Image (cartoon, rainbow, N blue to C red):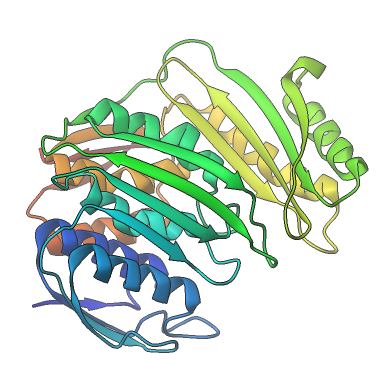
Length: 338
């Protein structure tokens, strides 16, 4: 049985989710301990428990420790079962993190799957729905997996209430992927999304982004949406011929709209001023699919602690080489299976 220390590296819930996904992919059981040990509230919270329960259903797994607050879990999978699944986080916890857990095994299953996910769709500290759809899924398509994602309703923290439907057409032969150059001129588009809030917030955010990135009026958009509770985010799309990067910042109480917009604009500017095609968060998301494919390479910004930790988890389950080489300041090359 594989032993995983949940406090290693960044020490968050991602270690559990990646371990669950890789356990299903490889059919190797594991035990994880010290789950989220360094967090203010250690152990499983609702969204982590939902991911665990979702993985157990998809894998017909025997599980121990599947209760709120548990700091140790054992997981014994017994296959990968395609099918129709509905998972509800029950709070505003991220539906995209549940998807992150079950997508890798379902994209190599023997049949098509349909997921209905309820909870948060646009959450701080998690991949928002738009990033998954615009940035991540098109790259899976190049690897041979077709995934359709339909956002039925937005779910913001703390009210939740979001819903999305995901249809997965798998492939047993994933193609390796190389993303080494950012080709073509970048097209930039900034959107402020607001739900049950004043449009003045969106106007202030977009004015800040315009000033920081030098955008014209055709490059900005206010998008008012319906949701159970109030919500706001700014996302900046940067599309080249190679990939579409999506940078996001979320509105918070007592944080000025200008400060929210500036967070997104700074990250976008850092990406634009580099010549690497893969952004900070995509670098993390690509590791498991490329390791499953047995090969791939990409160039990215200086890897986050999330990425470094995910590399270590992948190495525990898959016998695949992963090398990270610094080319120059804030430019790294990551190679898998070579």
